[in-house]
Amino acid sequence: MKLRRGTIFAAAPLLFVLSGAQARGQGSQTNAQPSPVQITRAEAATHLDHAVRPVYPQIAAVARIEGIVDFQVIVDTEGRVRELKYVSGPPILMEAGARAVRQWKYRPFMVNGQPVEAETTVEVPFGLGYMAFDFLRENNALAEKLQTFLPSDIDVIDASLGYARVADFEAAVLAARDLSIPFTELRCKELGGTFCTPPTQADSMSLGKAIRALKNGMSKKEAKEAEKKAQAEAKAIA
Image 1 (cartoon, rainbow, N blue to C red):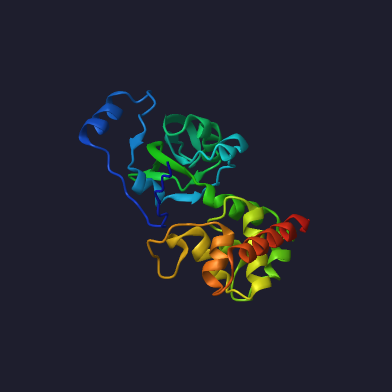
Image 2 (cartoon, rainbow, N blue to C red; image 1 turned 90 degrees about the horizontal axis):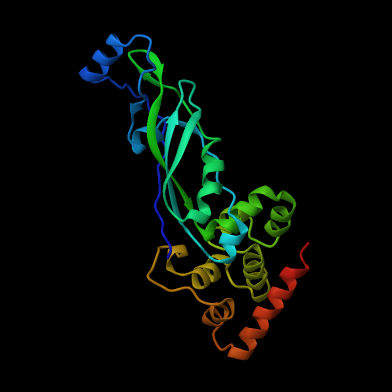
């Protein structure tokens, strides 16, 4: 089952005020370590300076496991994640999510002008639609090669979003070029309504069916041959 949720990170100053009970507790236990201030996920997101995307575990990708992993974290006075506890989400994605979150960096949370430790929750989304996108961001040589097959007004990294495999994206790019089909239209047909402009309720389909839907008069056999040709060309790209 595919789960999607988004988190908006925006920079904004925050001021957190201790409750009366917290203030009395600190006053009577001057030598004790104060408890972390409880911060909502939305509030914590406004202090997030650096977030690292997780590396998708190959075994989870092959099994097509997606979802959101939730963690409870304690952020120290310098904005680093000091402690992390798994809360929910696909267990197979837990360790990859934890490795990413441990590298996150926040602006220190302040109470009465002093940095304090904060406790909050974070969510790490894992979606197969990001796999080609992430790979091409790290592989400049391949991204530059594929960019030459696309119109100059289409960014290759953005165009790859939605494709689970780089090879599928390459085949779509090459098919669009070979058949003189606008790539954005082919992508919309192949991946479904989420990737159409404007978004529609359309379902995704195979590359061959998408080609046939956009090439009036093309037979099933011709569309299948065009699909196979594009896939073979994609394999030849080093």
